[in-house]
Image (cartoon, rainbow, N blue to C red; front, top):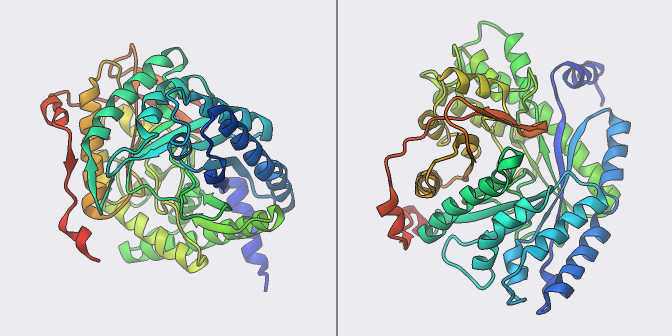
Length: 452
């Protein structure tokens, strides 16, 4: 039975507390599009995605009008393109990226993810070609996002891939230096990448997924902060309970939108990703939630404990609201996309080392961090290796999305606009890990990988 109080509370959340659906993402399998002729393969890819997703944007816009709930992004994720490219035996696979860009423009989505490779245990036929093509692909497209999974708890970390990705990230920034290095902002390096993640830049459609599926990512940091601000005097247990109840309400809204979208698009409903996804807008910050818990500023001693509480409570509240929870689920800490994180980084309260500690308990990892433009590729690879090791040992997803700010130094800023926001160039420890990275090989998995 509908409760008038609940309805009014939801309206308040939408109007004043930045509550929204961050993304409705349609996942589409391209396994049946493989062809030895790359031009034929690209045409199959274009035809299938357009046929499947032609109504995605109109349906989401109609749901927005009916429910009064903003849906900020409409996105598509596809089978990792390296798998499709493997059949072509072609070294010029940027054609696939250009095809995905054409798709995005045709159907009107904000982003399309899946220019990806899964290389955690080694390289298969199309992987080398795809990784080498990433800088050119992201520089020559606007809506295409890329990801590479370099490690997992089961198999360890592919250090050869880690070395390649350090170079690739630098090259992405160099090729888009005239556009605030936006290429690197569309590339993420994973350990334990989930197959049903609706968020960019890491979304791809896993091989275990249906032929077509709808996944939804919710938002709501502003709602959680507002709830805490209205409930002063709670002890830590009370704070956790309040976050759980708030996450439940946010997730129920996401579940409703996901089910409506799936039904109207005639595809299965996949998952709701519970992750609190911040924006640069004032009042929509994960960092401000942590500060509402009692920190002077995000990055202070106690930040990791506050984030652990938040992440756990969000998951506990969310799973009570939906039986189909997946993706990343928890709390994001992207520096350039979070107004509170931006302020803390500018003030020097938040440094990369503290962010790395926080990634042990958050949803993802070192996300949207601007670093000096002269940072060597092997240092970037070292950061990737550290973050992947946290994910591997703790059986969780971790990721790295770094943006070398070409021509800029610590204290300067990059401005990406929109949800990607802006960020100060943060200090990086440049003591060289080059010899370690240059060894290559496979970093072995921890013993817990032998559970089965």
